[in-house]
Length: 512
Image 1 (cartoon, rainbow, N blue to C red):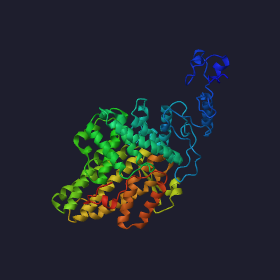
Image 2 (image 1 turned 90 degrees about the vertical axis):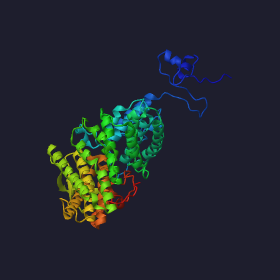
Image 3 (image 1 turned 30 degrees about the vertical axis):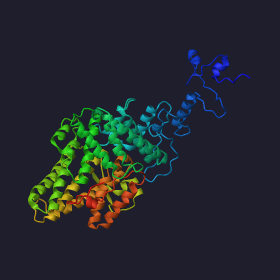
Image 4 (image 1 turned 180 degrees about the vertical axis):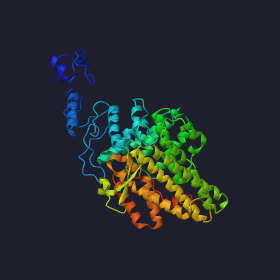
């Protein structure tokens, strides 16, 4: 009995010998005919069949109807392809994103690279506030969208894996789909492995792909599914070491600026938490931003903030030693820092077309009032756009930390010569804490997207610990209620920090 032919359908129909090449035979190529594929040798065998046209029709139909009726095909990089979206239930914080050309999760039908780019684009539109599109100069904030224009097939595997991870995490938060989180955890591990390999290659210090991967993985630590205690601090330290070994270099591209400004801000925040001076306060690093094309108010703000961690270290040593030799210098520098911030705020507000913020009734913020029923603060602050609110929140956060430090120094040394009395400083600290609380509703609203809630991490916890230390139970409960409402879907601060001690002058507790 003659063996059953396993050639393609065209060759069997023509009764010619088929070479059975993959993905298609050469005879079909010669005749300029699509090869239909092969039938299985065994009943349960798996053979290649060309179903590209059928898959394309199903995906096109799904995109037009907004449904998820098509099943994704396997790409060349299965870890980077987006898992199918399950039916989304009513969410606590995020309603199901509207079905548009940007929010329907695309299916992988052409390549892993195409699928990665589409998935990253979707995730960034869910992460980024809508008003950022109106701000051309925004490299100083953690807006990773500019990375998409640098991705190529030759990009570092670490960067590609990091992009997949942040995309999957954001999609998991927005759609509340555990499948995204499971894929993100696996891809995160692969990204860390690829990063170790990349860091051991020669000439790595000039590779922005590697630096970009490090910054994205640092940011991933703000998502609960992959966050580990102390890992955010470790990532910040890693980026600092990378830049220190590279040395100060000119900022040329948008990506150069975004990576450097973001790294510097993370370093400032870590320095404030540890209350230790940071490397970027040195003159050679301060000179890096002098020629940056980003000439709005934000670089000037960070040029002030860069010195605050070192100032806190001096104040802590003063209080711990009990020796008032350097008391006048520390007090004077703290007051100068406060005045510099006040001058910056006045200049920044003068540049704006609209008022930087206005007092409104809390009912203006529909999502916030739906999530949090605590009415301790009946008034809230509204901002004309996200960038204005973001910079104002940074200003209040660091102003609060300076005022708190000055407050502790004056309490330790009551006879200190200071242009502000202790009673005046106490009132200033309380008012700044209230301002930080009243801005929370704005950052909870849909227009602020996920980035808005990241901006509330530290102001919320600083205010919470301040009210707790003062025995202001009502305000403390409000902060806790807001925390529970805003961070219950996969976004949360990754570090576990005893702020009551970690930010107390004179304490040298290691922050982990």
